[in-house]
Length: 184
Image (cartoon, rainbow, N blue to C red; front, side, top):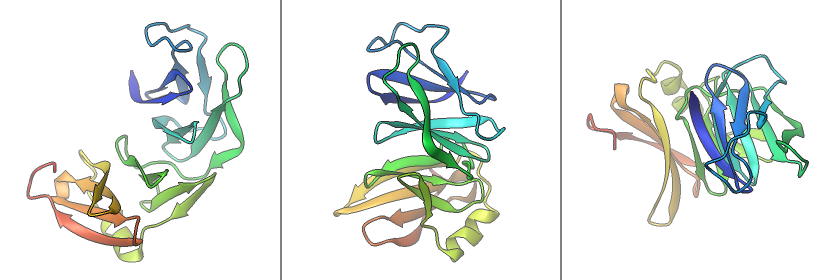
């Protein structure tokens, strides 16, 4: 069972639920899958939660860590960990990452919001936002990216809390929105 997918260099990559493994299609063929086309995020002993693509790299989010893998160009399954591509923060939930402003943002396992800058998980959340997220019920929570009046935003929607925390990447400011019981 897959928990996420990413498209990189004409491969479709999938994270495998409750394991550290991910697998992919054959090159430029979404209907063909070789049983040997898989790799493992193995720098830390945690399970993968989801996968994302950023700058032609696979971002493998685990429960407590994250790894960056890239296409080595080798034969067989060509993906391997980027040198120094291990982050000591995971993700808080399967749908809590979004691409915005040429980067990936996620709600990290320590309940901070991070922005990937190369191989560095830069903290973008502020203390007040982190206090709210620390005790938030993440049931059904998800992240989304959008643009509003020229502002690039990442929203972390918390349906169980009937609220959303939104980061404006254009101004580096946060605001809270009520979801009104809907899912936006």
